[in-house]
Amino acid sequence: MKGDGAFDPTEQRSEGAVRRRSRLRIAGAALAVAVVACGIAIGVGLSSGDSGNRSQAISLQPAPDDGWRWDFYRDVRIEVPDSWDYASEPRSDWCVDNGKWLPDEPYIDLTAGEFVFGIGCPSTNGKPGMSDEPPTERWVPHVRLTALGAPDTASVSRLNGWWIVKQPVGHVLVKAVGENRAEVDRILSSATVVDDDSSGCAPHSPLQDSAFPSPDPAFDVAELTSVDSITVCSYELTPSEPGLLGVYELTGDDAMTELHALQAAPIGGGPDRPNDCGPDDPGDDALQLRLASGAEVDTMYVFYSSCHDNGFDDGTNVRELTKDACVPLVHAPVTLTTGASASFERCFSRSSDG
View (spheres, one colour):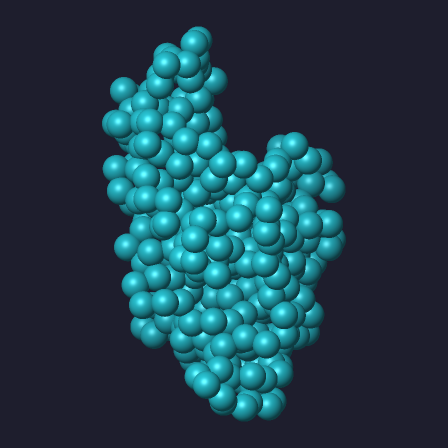
């Protein structure tokens, strides 16, 4: 239980079919059956899951506590203070530019595959040789989620008053760092395995199952007159594992502006440089867009990380990546870490929050 004594790093929590109704902004929540008792909504959701079908979206998860929010990575959700930003945990290149880039406020790190300079930084915290971390006086409380590897195990350590607790949950290694052990335990105990799309994005997407699939069923984005929200789901294209890397949602006027930008993108796809990679290379990651209007949801795919077959795909047409349509989709915690230069440039903005 959250906040009840020290966190047990040997315990994993999984999510069953019964959940409290979420207050998160997931459009078109629908319950086939709902019984409210003691503040708990018990029901069966009508979910699109991994099917990609136009359907009613679901929202069947506990509401975050006041002042807290849910974040999602692969098949795990975790609750962190709402004031926490998104940033990258310092690595072996922490001393670049004298460490001026180091985060100075609490954060959560969902970044996958980020670039690391091939340099060594001087020893800190009494360790010999080089150091993969800055001195503890430069640390701030944070959480880092990474893909679980074979050597990863639960552990608890302490350094100069800082707790470092690691716990495997689902396909994720959850690492929490802080001076306040109660807060570290509370965050870690909230980490839960999920297997549905209650975040707005399922842990696994049809994007991962083949190279450059088209949404099924197809629709024509040009025929949409309005949307209430557009949920951006970022996926690593690893076929066998949950690939969700981040979830971001556009609502209201921002969603309508994005819809119009998608509709204005020229049909034909691209930009491509097919001579820069092999014909079977789909790239490393892609985006799935869930366009919700009322209870109805249509799905688009966004390919940008290969040297060919890039574009916005609604199953009817593949439209060219344009800055007006692609840049607004890349907003923390959705980030770009790879891509062919021509297409990457259309989706990346140095002034973007993402």
